[in-house]
Length: 186
Image (cartoon, rainbow, N blue to C red; front, top):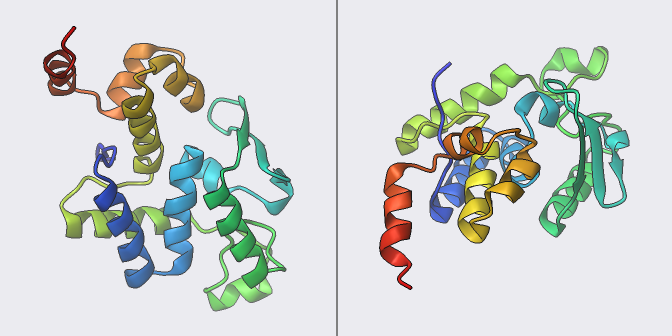
């Protein structure tokens, strides 16, 4: 699997959302937009059921780590979820597969990781960025770090155990550290 990046420019984040909607579907853009705000791994994001949502919180057990993710939903996510519920009141999964004609006659399933990976990769190629399903999680971590410079908060949000892992994960490079030294004069 190719290494993907955090998307550092807000204009690019918005353009990715637009291109996913235009080239694929509103549902694919919703995955990007909600995924940016929840910072979950793609397997956990796609497996969200409406029953996992409790008022303004999402409570799930992460598949990879077994850790409990108890996430307060922001206004953007709440609105997106409400729109999905209005348009698909019979869905069990937040990102339920329904375009495939066979989906109508089989047990409800979420979209596949493979479908999302392909859409993200193709949009990434168009924009010449290493875009993948993990880019959502990395992007949220990167922007939280840029806003707060608090690696502990980023670690907690991503449920990481090491500062070094988190810094590498969100794409903080020597150039960023050098700029911090240049821009912060005391």
